Image (cartoon, rainbow, N blue to C red; front, top):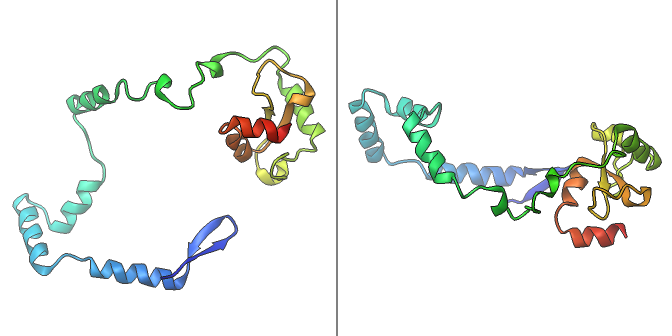
Length: 169
């Protein structure tokens, strides 16, 4: 079996692995008998088999009644409180008055416009660095509590908060 070959951040398949996948795909084709059955069924509906299969997967239109049934089935399953990341509406609490664009820019300047976890400069990132609260308290605007992070690292800090609080010290 082939293995993954790393190129930068993305993983690509080795030529050997690609050949194995292609060979496996050739083995899985329908038998002649099965294809004939499928074609006759599709023709009975007024379409060629291959046309039927491609059309069945794209551009599906649901009736209004069907959409309402799907919506009713989902209600209750996907509420905010059922999400494991729910923190009791903490994200809806507004930031204090001192939290402004200029204040965040001062923190980025202090950190040299570099992510304090991975070291990626803001210029290479292509986006402004986020300003993160080390203690996860929106109201604590002391400079020791704030750090500049790239979007990728900032996402990481929202999981396993105890670890990140110790990491930032």
